Image 1 (cartoon, helix red, strand yellow):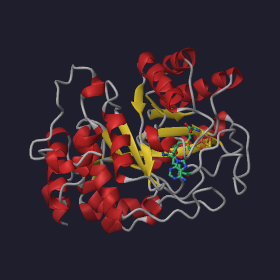
Image 2 (tube, protein in one colour):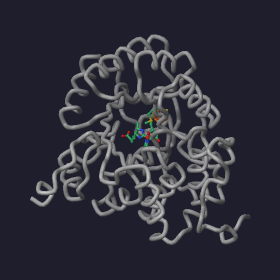
Image 3 (cartoon, protein in one colour):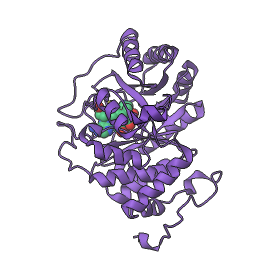
Length: 344
Ligand code: SAM
Ligand code: DTB
Ligand code: SF4
């Protein structure tokens, strides 16, 4: 077993130059040593890195829409949309284009700059591709950035989405490879890496993160972050989801993660992936505002915005607006307030 105390954490930086093979950039031990820093030191490091690359008072807002809900053939233990679980949500068909556009316009009116469409599929079928590429074209024509999460993709499917103008594709690694098999059996870790590679090859921005609070150890959380940080290049967007323990799923009774450990995960993601957008994702509804503020202080700079995630609830947009005002946070793309406006 590795002891973290032998690692000098005072100057933990990627071991090799960024152009070196990515797989050697962050060892799990190095990432675990970051997790083990005193909380204040960890936050300070994360803030330093964050301020080197971003305006710390700016947050990117994406709104999610479930365009095809439930009845999923995969057995992801956390997911209420899996047909394998007793309490799974009712299955519905792929939404019609006009309904998707209506939701996209409403999201835009609320201030979202990206619209993320999710489908409960193992992977899209050929007949679906025509419909989802049309959605991408039309949502983009509204002036929104587009994101989709449709499950596994073949190279040609990724290319078709790119040709339609898709900006981001979300596909998560979810956990460390060592823990993954306890949660999902119907698709392998390698399947996920293959999809990510197809998305990258097609030239679509990669949105890839994971879930914490599923009963994994800190070492396994470090393993997830190391996997993400060693992707070459690392994802442009990294959603960190805190498990929403949904009744009827195998993880329904999972004890919540220590909130400070969640903040640590955000901070470690920020330090190891300095230029990525770290997204404070599922689980915000269960957090109080002080905890969310700590997540922003730890380097989170993007959220899901709107009162629904896919099937579970998210804070109301007005509540998020009020929190952002209290913290002096601006939505990305918004004009900075003049000094006298701030004081008012
Ligand atoms: N079906 C597609 C797939 O799995 O790639 C896309 C949708 S799936 C719901 C997207 C991600 O949402 C999952 O990879 C997981 O990280 C996250 N997620 C799903 N259920 C969750 C839950 N109960 N709590 C937290 N995150 C969850
Ligand atoms: C991601 O990492 N989190 C979002 C998005 N990508 C698609 C989904 C969260 C889903 C939470 C459970 C639900 O609402 O069904
Ligand atoms: Fe299906 Fe995605 Fe849910 Fe897994 S996470 S069961 S693939 S919808």
